[in-house]
Length: 220
Image 1: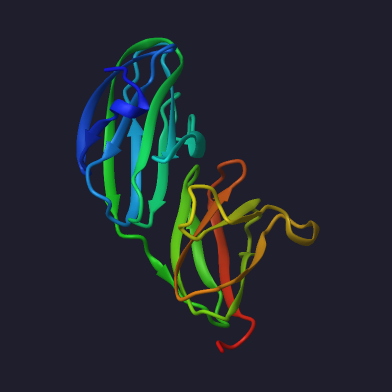
Image 2: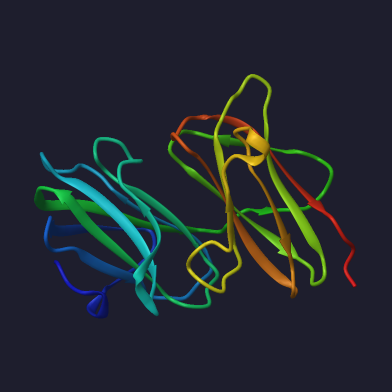
């Protein structure tokens, strides 16, 4: 039922929920446990005229959206993915651009795959409308260059972002590096730990690309 951020419903991963909302009254939820991983919320089987939007917020700042999705699940349904570091709770909002009614909401969690720095280009694949999330272990005093690269026979417009867990918003983001459609970011690690990378395709297209992560300096 519609509620406020302060009264967010507690939800569990790997469960299906029935949500009732209107265009003027959203539904807020939060996962019960602070566990790191990739969280996915998805609406489906919408009533006629209903257009859902899913959004994620840091619990300590519910006025600043960290991620949002409108129609990536198709047929006006939404699919939102967000990686949690497990340090602070996140809030999720299901709202409607139009219509009202009851619809299914699927909540799930999975481990975030890891990537490593190196000279090799790591092949990646979009299935269409998705966001790829990867975690990278970083060493204090080391600078990293993270790049998306064209795969043979593919032309994609990638957007690359880095999250360091110190806020809900990305630490850095890049779209078109050096005038082409691929992305590049440099990141300096001030402490040992993990960062999270997200890559999405601007228009939601499917296809392959390469991900390369290079250490620019040695740890000191």
